[in-house]
Length: 142
Image (cartoon, rainbow, N blue to C red; front, side, top):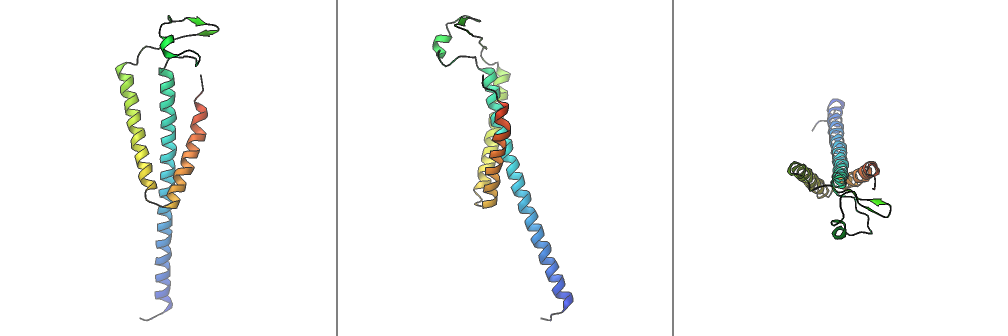
């Protein structure tokens, strides 16, 4: 094999291009997985918020069984009870679809972690932390 500056330069530039392409692909993969983890946490928090809106307000000192015998708008001490009727069918369908999306995203993130790539694993951890940090303060405790 003949070595000259032209061939050596071509081989080095092709190798450099290959490294840049591989590195760009890896960074893009980690960013996409990080965003999937953030989206998973956001959907989980949104689903929790929807469930909170659909459930009746019952203080922890009164059981659900005892609360069902109280009339609408009853007060016990300084606490006023308001009950929401059972979820209508379309509401339940929406909750089911949100759950399916959450499960699919969870499996996608799990499969990404199962690639045993440490950068992808770190991306999932950081994405979950960012998602939790951003979304859970939006859920107010009643």
